[in-house]
Image 1: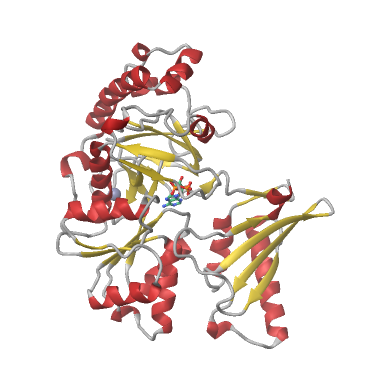
Image 2: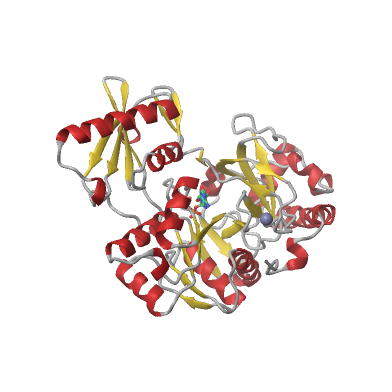
Length: 436
Ligand code: ADP
Ligand code: ZN
């Protein structure tokens, strides 16, 4: 297959040149931030670091971190690197973890962001011959605007359906022969399920690829979506604080997401001590935006846990790859002293042949954590013999226990009893937090 890139020279740049480019940009960016962002200047002064101390990417760890708490403190205008008259847009986080962040963009920031999304679309096989349906939410959420802009840059015919109204999503996909679908993986699963209910077979659906991200999803979920829609499903990662989707994206090799390193310098740190970790180890992902003008964050702690690896990739891209995030450090639940990630639960469920429609409920009773998982049965699994359900539940508890080290209570529910997600799925209801 012919190799396809949106910006070949940058995407396949030799690593030493790439690092040199990053170093040059970093030196400039630190100076820009020090001169224009009082909040960060104060952090640097407190740490005793001057812009002259940063001569290249090897000096990155001298800089102070920025955290979500800093973004909250500085809300709304305290981290801006440009005057308002140079800014043309804001976007805002979806507030999944309860903290809304407002990020600012100059026109140049938007152009670079859309180029990152265009790289992802081309890597998923997109071109100006494609019809790209963008079913991420539009508005403050970055998903819709980001992929929409990327699709325009590629020259694809763009269908800006936004999320929701699943009937209409299916109608546009089939009537207009959409070839690439962009949405959250949970919404893709829902669209796949809805096609099936209407009697469509995967081969009747014109889609060939999907670009899914904005929330954690497992390999098992990928296979399930690929089967239901008859497509190849690509992962895309990003966060509002840095621009939005397109900070990294998967190529056809699908062994991690290439980080757009010409714009974002990535580090992995030990989340407890802040110490940088060597390549290949799992830790918290930290980003420095090298080109952002309006909202230039240095050493921003994402709370996302993953690993970075720089290995030769068959796609020809040289940019470092990040593994699928295990989830955010905030997503990790500590239940009876054991660390549990929703993604582990998803893996077990799909491996055992259940649907990706589940919800985890954690509470505390008599000073002990309670741990319940509601799982929806597929119509063909649904059986009203009580004995069968009890046996299934027992088997699933066993499988959970061997993955997690602790056993939840499992409740198998009739089809359609768990609300479907059109955006980011809510997988966990932690009632302990409500009591605190
Ligand atoms: P919010 O924090 O309100 O959800 P964002 O929409 O900016 O706001 O979400 C960014 C976060 O979404 C990332 O920090 C990460 O935790 C998660 N995320 C984005 N893309 C992916 C992905 N492909 N896989 C796993 N998690 C992702
Ligand atoms: Zn690759």
